[in-house]
Amino acid sequence: MSEPTGRFGRQAGRIYFGSDFVGTNTLTLLGPDIQVFGVGTETGANKVDETGGVFTAGTGATDDDNIVLRSGVFSPRDGRMVCNARFTLVGLSCAIFVGFADTLDTTTPVMPAEFATATMTYSGSSVGFNYDLDGTTDDFRAVMGVSGAAGSDSANGIRSNATLTLNRWFETQVIVNEDGTAECWLGEVGHTAGSGTENKMRLIKRFSAGTLISTTGLFFAVLMLEVRNNAGAQTMNVDYFGGEAGRDWRAA
Image 1 (cartoon, helix red, strand yellow):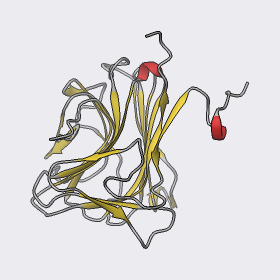
Image 2: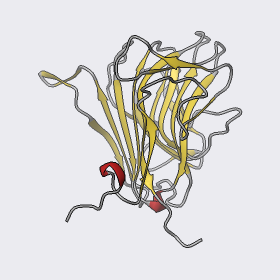
Image 3: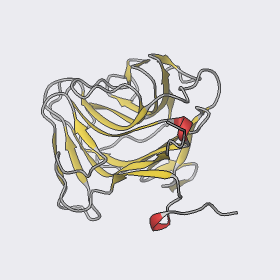
Image 4: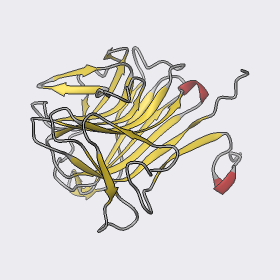
């Protein structure tokens, strides 16, 4: 039996959010469902030499300055939550988080997961991908944090063995189910597997054991970029950021 559909062929009872960044985009004009804020002086504008709509997001020049794209809030109890993003890095002297997070102050936002040397630390509860120049080995890592500690079997994150080069397109999908389990998928242009090159999404980690994120918690979909190593302003080109979540059908 097929699922009922709403407007534009979308499934009824679902919330769809985000942007493909087609048209004019600035820090104050990203559509009604995306907030932009950060520490320092954020920058943002259309990338004029890319087709299909690409938004260039930039940070201030000081260490730990950041820029956040955020939408929400959503809760697993209302149905499956999905966060999708596709982006390139213009510089690698940075940290990135993409996924869902419950704690993200709009004045002084802090990375939901940060990796230094070989240790992951967590702020609040979150699930998604972390990249951090402060780590000894650079990679995208699937992470789950619960109340400021590692959740499930996340520990110091699960490596994706991605190839981190400038201007390489990365695609992420983070899924949180109604029971608090989660999946972290990563795609990258030109990823080498076995004897060939593939561009398809890979399941990096399914979090299903141990302590999981709260099914009644409130979470934002987040894409966050932060300066590392006093390297000056960092930028990323974002092709799209968005996803879907369930509606609250409970009685008030």
